[in-house]
Image (cartoon, rainbow, N blue to C red; front, top):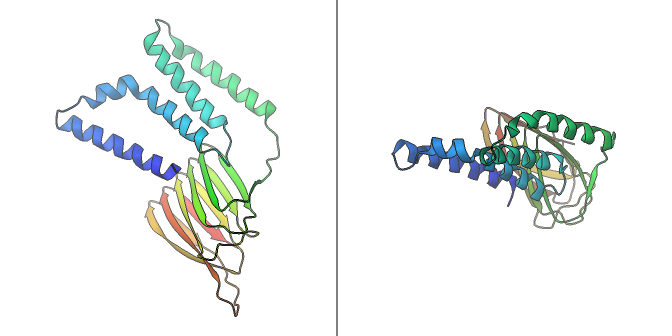
Length: 219
């Protein structure tokens, strides 16, 4: 399941919860105040599941924080006081053992899936039959390079979702791009230049959802 779907389900869950609260069917505020750490843990799990082309550090960080807050409700100890020291230790270990120069992640398959939450992804596709996929950034960023990729005969469709984040998509000049989508306090910019050719150009369809974020398409 793509990060875009998870993000939509999260909004749907909160909307239904508050709707039931207003209808006096469920005390959603009480449920939320007790079980909200599970939401943090689920976000971490989603990040790990969808981390094909992004770092797992953020996922484990969310699971750690959510787990501590959840345990704090079951154990007669102030575990919350240990969260900041543990976070500092965790971040320090990440800084020490993470390579300074991040290399582009190679992609050769027909489908592309990337989910970046409070992190970044840099992907260079060399697929010879690219069919599309989904790229989601939430408080993060992604750079997708398709200049060495070839589209499938039927073309390709990519869902680009940027929520308080940004995505940059680089395409070759012999690739025709069609952009559509929904801007919500955000937007996208198509800077591509199409090289004229006697042959019919393959078409890359982009479905953009920009929520306080942006998408840039360029050569």
